[in-house]
Image (tube, rainbow, N blue to C red; front, side):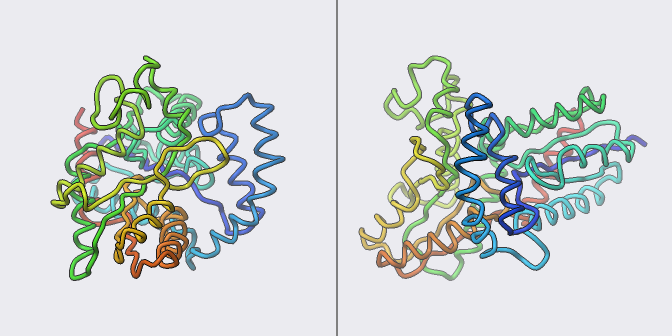
Length: 345
């Protein structure tokens, strides 16, 4: 019987919430040319001389604020998703083997692929856990996976699931999770907060050079010109979830979080939107982060701790962080359906 390998890939997390471990993680992450697109010598200087020495202790404290007894939330949540996906697939067909990896940090993509091929899989289905496409998330994960697979002589048996920002079953499970978490709770507004990106990184994918951030409403719909535009995909996801929930255009806002450095990043900025909502008299806000399918530093600490404090300090009364999909049963079932469909092709 032929075995089919499944590899889930998430972004990554330090091995421990310590300055040394965080420093190693940041160096690996920020030295990726897909993350900081500068010539190698300049990138090396910026990362190793400017950014990491300044941020490793501060970032370590943030990681410590959310660290769980059994590890980093991102690691724990991704591991649980892989375990439950393996169980779901095994109930359907015992041909599947599931591993998970991090683009940066551990377990590495190389170690996970070696496990799958050592177990005798005849093909590997790779599922990057990024709903929206970006060079600094989806693309770099795929490039690294293909590089390792080529080194192992197995690139020809590997296939990759595409970004799923617009898949109806993904939209439905996001809406279901929000509805479940807001059941019997009051809220006046839903904020969809996505990870931000440098504007130049997004504009670089506009080959026409005449559309992105130039045409009015350039992100209002997906077309051939902006099919790989991260911001347009985020807008699509938020609007689709809002429609599924029956929210009108005044009941939700789209914002962007997690900026780094002084360059221009996608906006509006989540922190500013939270202050503005409070100034407009909104007392109860629910925040959903649909660019993350597993809770991590950016959701639990940046929104759940700092974002909540910003909103309350500005006069708000309650900020409800909607958990990421993590290992939600319907999300596990949805992923299993995608894997099965890919295996049939």
